[in-house]
Image (tube, rainbow, N blue to C red; front, side, top):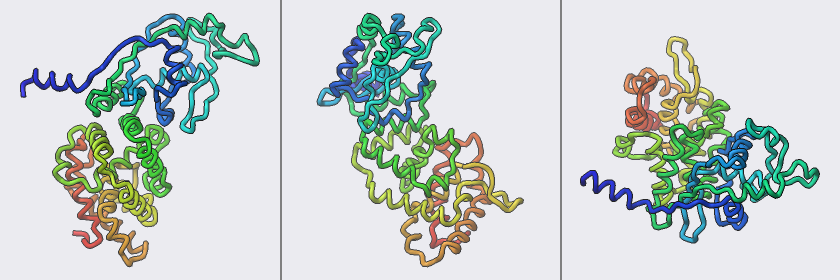
Length: 379
């Protein structure tokens, strides 16, 4: 296929319409439930009060606001693809923003800004003190301001809105790659997102991975959950086709959900059994490097160790359920195998900095499956 044919084909997959929409209209369609900003996204809503106040300042001063991207469902409802923080700020300021449970959140109180210092303490309206609220003229100024809206029409390829969301929210975006994937999953299937979120909060899992506060705030626990979900049983051929890891994880997640290939009951059983076993046995030593000279596990969490052990045990979890050994004996065997792995050149050569996931995973995943098969002894 020639380059021009590829361009023509890809352009045909996305059909869009663009026009300015007044903030008053955006408020109205939110109140009428005709736009879904997905309340689950609020956990990724990181603007502080000053950033929110600057947006309101920009609107009042007539400074152009960047476009909002939405995808139109078959029933005409808009799914917000990009523009969550801008819309949430407007809805919070007006006092209509709802949380995941449909409860209206407290209205935003503004901070003073560079050009409008008297915004300090202002609200959309104030029953207690009318001086704290905007005047009708100021409210109309906001309602009549227009924001460009780019609508991905329902005739577009179903994957187009997810591809667009991923591209808009990478690079300089405040969202981590996993937060982007979480957002895509919410748009795909909110129930599956809630199922995954619930499992990633499992106490045994949390104790084993022992992440920093920053890693948790960037949803790295969900990242690790999806790695377990996707790589636990992935065949070798697919492991060789990973390329960019973040794109692979997103594409595979979309494929599993859209094609109904995800057996949630089985995956939940495998996940819970794996980390119930690990927390009872190796626990804090699960995903750390073994220093043979010092004779102990040390350092921080290592994703390569996670890929090796968690996916290895997860692949063989049914065999572990049928073992007649006590926890101490299983721990002894697992520790012995972990020590061997950290002396194995194939494994250690793929764990250093600068090693791409596309090069590492085809080695660590098969090794873990073989090494942590309880029927196999240490080589």
